[in-house]
Amino acid sequence: MRIRPLVALAALILLSACQSAPAAAVHPAAQAPIPKPPPTLATAIQRAAHLGPADRTTTVFLSFGLKVRNQDQLAALAGSGRTVSAAEYAARFGPDPLLVQQAVSAVDAAGLQATWQAPSSVIAADGPAPAAASLLDVDIESYRLPDGSSFYATLDQPHLPPALSAVTSNVSGLDDYRGARGYAVRPGGLTPVDVLSYYNIKPLRDAGLDGTGQTIMLPEIDDLPNLNDLDKFAARFGLPAFGPLLTLKRDPSWGTPEKPQGETVLDLEIAHAVAPNAKLVVYFSAPDFGHGDRALDQLVTDHLGSIISESLGSCEPDTPSGARNVYAAIQDRAIALGISHFVASGDSGAYTCGLDQAPAGSFPSTLPTVTAVGGTSVFESQQGIYYKEYAWGSPIDESGGGGGASQFYAAPAYQKNELAAASHGRRQVPDVAADADPSTGFHIIFGGQDGQAGGTSAATPLWAATVALINQDLKQKGLREVGFANPALYWMGENSARLNPAPFHDVIAGNNLYFDAATGWDSATGWGSMDAAAMDAAWIRYLKGGGA
Image (cartoon, rainbow, N blue to C red; front, top):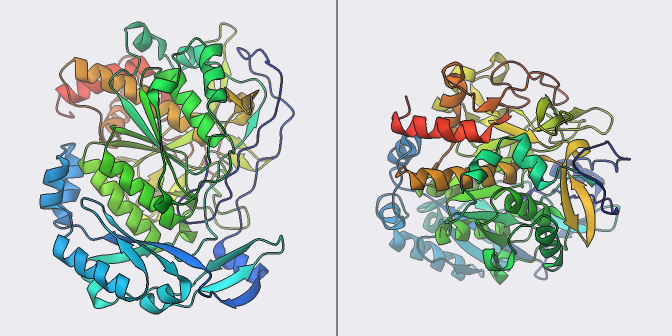
């Protein structure tokens, strides 16, 4: 997984070039070290040289999150599983257009260039740092790190003038230090055939489910070098060509993505292997919060599909409250529109902020309105089918699936029966898990080379693509699509004893460097990994029974 929202997480994906290695059997390879989480903003500032106030040559990219109306009704809608059209959302919950225009005028008058177009949840505002500092009554300072890289940031809380506070309460983009990252890769890996067998996806594919009519949307922060890797992957494994199925979205207001790291390739190849006829739409942005929020907002506005696969995140306590709240408001709209959103939980075990910090989760996986995907290490039988899984936790390279309690979000209603004493009534992650250990990872092609990919950013598109197959089946049977998945997933977990076969592989061994896997839900692997065919049957039962 990588870390995206405004907070800085250097996108990290390590790739080990190799010749085409047999991948049906996975053997641990000589491993490149898993990159460690970057220092928090406060620590980075302590280590950096202070260059003084950011001047007019420094451009900031702000995103103001707009307040919704009837918040209680919107929360009730999300919990009910019902959805609304974009027009109904705007009428019932969207911001007052007149107040928004007044806010835009105030931002323009302050020396920034502001834009907004309904039904967006964000006012985008770009301009010189001194203008932003004056508008929000903060000090924006410039810094240089020992490695020579520079950044701007403020530790002040912004103060919104009346014209803005009437329609917005949060702003992201006040630093460009915090960002995003992705995780490890090495030779070998599970092939598409292995994956279909291991998680019992093959019966769905044999039934003609291939993702036709479904679209998976992916926010990404690293570019694609070209389509050669994707074409080679599709040809190697007898999959449809990516060309007719893939759409790449870019916009200058979303900033420039990082040079290719392999993360986008990883997400697309895994999703395509599971749901080969699903359309794939990538929204590229720069790795900072201000740009990333704009791209996500447009993704939800476009609503080209009903599934989001997001392999991005950041140290939750080091993510500014404004950035978290802007993102959460966009996600509320996604749920109301019936979009399923799967988010990687992180690759540093329970220590997303680093081993020198207290255990903490990764935002946005800690949001109660997304489905957080944790990690496992997999073990195949000699026949290449499911044998067992452990929670992914490697103390040698300090890696593992993210998990634990949020520091900010209360436990949602669907999780009330799983509350651990240590959570103090807070939202707990992950919700589910899948193979993420790089030593037992997935076969991908990047830079023309065969490689093996791990991380929760590999497990996340696996879940998203499987739900694309389930959505296709549900629609064929005249049922609604999955939408917000967590109420159904927790119903399945709590009723697994009367669901035969069980929809989850309950992972009961291993740990994520802090939390142990255990029977039932746990903070290392959630409910565990999927038995896709059983989960499809359980989802049909859940919907036909009205969630009972």
